[in-house]
Length: 334
Image 1 (tube, helix red, strand yellow):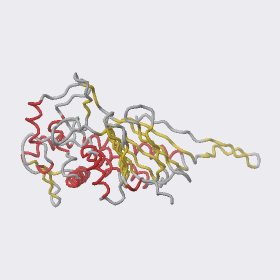
Image 2 (image 1 turned 120 degrees about the horizontal axis):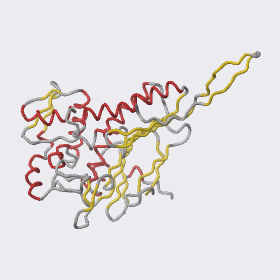
Image 3 (image 1 turned 90 degrees about the vertical axis):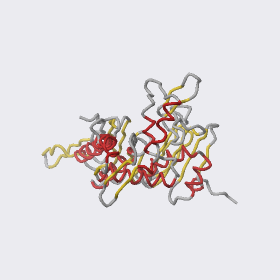
Image 4 (image 1 turned 180 degrees about the horizontal axis):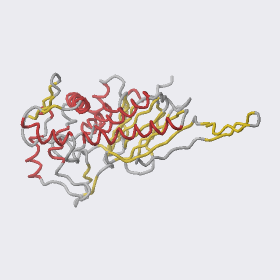
């Protein structure tokens, strides 16, 4: 059973000609649910007119994240991604619609960013143990880096198959799968008639509509001060994804921060950036782009985003300077 936190409806009594009608429910309210899936906290709130509908929809949305995790987690031996990693070097592997859609989007972001986003980083990523504070040796990295190349993942759209060009490739969808799950959750809400909602999975969020007449206020965390925001943005009907070097990290023996956003070129934690927040239409896209911009850095990342319609970015670099795309710059008054 999911750990659900629900704002219960207010029950009223209706007195009519001496007869008590029980219960009449004043149920139009905000409902809130939470869970943990895909190794991250899931938070959902939405406006609904009926408590029974709200509980049903809440359960269905939270279940989406467990379903995607069962398909796309590289940490589960029985997941579809793990089976792909075991078999795709031996020949084409037929995959599900969901997995193929995520792999296609991953390739799109990889091409757009010239490989800054690369799901084959898992070929060296598995050498890191963030819980134990362990990183690979230089020899281990050099051995694994030749297998980090998104172009070696061959997608056949007609047959819906995936094949790896070489042995040892490990696909890791940790930089994009949560965004896909958020989008699926929003689809469930819309199909159930929900029009105002906020759904988040760690650093990935979708806002459905506004907050009933006012915007949602979304804070971008200060990367070096937990509980403090660097900036707060009024938003509605958008996806927001943040990648930060504070999410999974440890300090090595030299006092350097070793975090989970790795450069496909070096296999090491990217330096020069503390966080990247992307704002766009869907979380599948914003999730992948937040990692891509983090790897590219402020200058190249902003240049890429400015070429994309409907996408904005906030970058906080390692000097704690904030860089924003033109769409977020306030208009200049005369």
